[in-house]
Image (tube, rainbow, N blue to C red):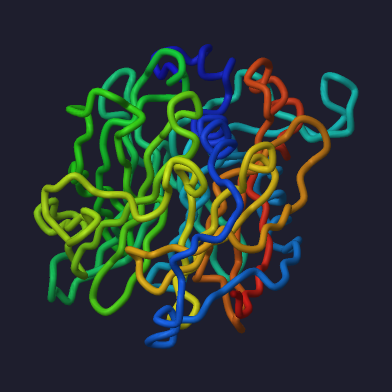
Length: 411
């Protein structure tokens, strides 16, 4: 989506939203790989699948309450790309990609419908951050939190973690992984992937200190082969495993691929500390090799999430074909590098009526307890034509929803 014209942004209205929807729609094909066996149960790892799920109306309603509060004109009223991180003082920071600011209005809307609405001229920024304390959203940081690097280029925040300022340091900082994209032509109308960056923010003030490029992909001519990291992070044994994906296009590739890098604790902002799984070994400054996605039967959307359940890694992404806009599927593995088994059980969380789509399933370990995972998914209007008008006419369309998922032994 062009970034140098506010009108163009409002006409398309979303950015990451439909970009992910297009990718996720061709993400997976059901069927178990044939490479799992008894060794998968070593070290406490067991096959896992979704045994049950239920809507989380309280958490969903909190974003409705906050987004519908018309008391300010510079705070969050809707967004996608939902990620979260727990801060040392107990606050929860929510990070979003394309975000509507401004005010909302009570129904009826201009079409006479009973939906809360916003003006079509409401500000749209590329990223935002909202603070929550004790389960209640309390404020939006000045937005955008991460400025555009240049005209026609922008930053979308993805996963984040609190870590030492450097390995062994007693001082903690917040590190946020950023996707850098730039204006492109069809089929890249929602942005061409260009680089992965890491931002450092001070604690507890959350002052942006620096941004560094850890993986520049502009030298790769085919944008569909460019890998952006940070859709999800998993910490284990002094390492942060950073998962990423490509933007494989349905016209050239039936499925997108998942990749993984690792960084020692405290090293996220040091490009030299990043090691990429090549397919056979961890290597620095190497072309990463896919850990999931064979181009035929299996794969992921460019935004997915990984969580640990005891000794097992569980990956959530959108399902295959037409279901890829409504249905979440899961994989499991005993190692971040795989082999990944699945897709396993699928479930279809609730969507608003009409031409809407779900995408970007993300786990939130900070809110998960008693063996249950909290999972968010983003919602958007499916058609590109008139998307901005629909998102303004009904502000509830462009906000995260939440479910609670219970995992159980799989096969």
